[in-house]
Image 1 (cartoon, rainbow, N blue to C red):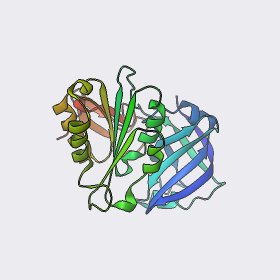
Image 2: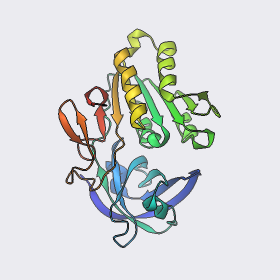
Image 3: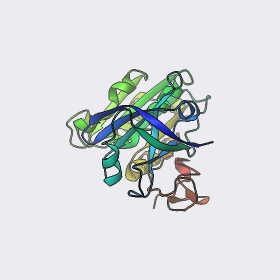
Image 4: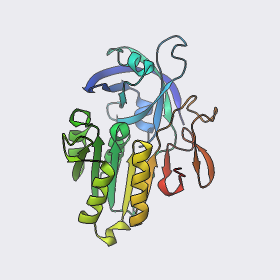
Length: 264
């Protein structure tokens, strides 16, 4: 169940060029958010910008009654959001959507994030600790200073691998290529059945990851990035095609089984 409340900003950091991390106060969102869910943020007191901005829940602390949002400045709304100062409040609606499903029978979790796709994976890594034997994280970025959350993941997972498009850090190339190399060299065929891939990022990356998962017969869940308007399943503006027909990313997602999504 989601609620609407004014959440006080406890911290607001510029963590990379055009990337910011917000820490907000909310006992309810901190205790009720599941990995893969998001909140809808109202920016400003007027109707400009008109629509709320959907942002993945990045991390939560039930103990301290706070949650984090990681976002990139890509337009007017997020540009205005980046100007908010500590102590001010934001009108938040959430948590929303369907998150990742954790199968406790699986022993290996492989988290694949491309660019801002790492945002919902940190809370997932936190949740997976103690529920699976090994957690591996693969982070893809355009260049070195756009690599997000590497140190955060290193503190709670077994291994972190990084790739950059320009080769300025980690392996040069796409993170999907790193995934295939990782599977071929670090997993056994027996481990394929005990593994789950959790991925979030650009559509092209997700399709490549799902293709690899299908080839290796590994379960794969994807968090879809889609433009949203209402964020609550009413306007039908964020639908994607699946084998079961059109699905609303905001309401029936954003997480789907990779094999169910129609990618063309």
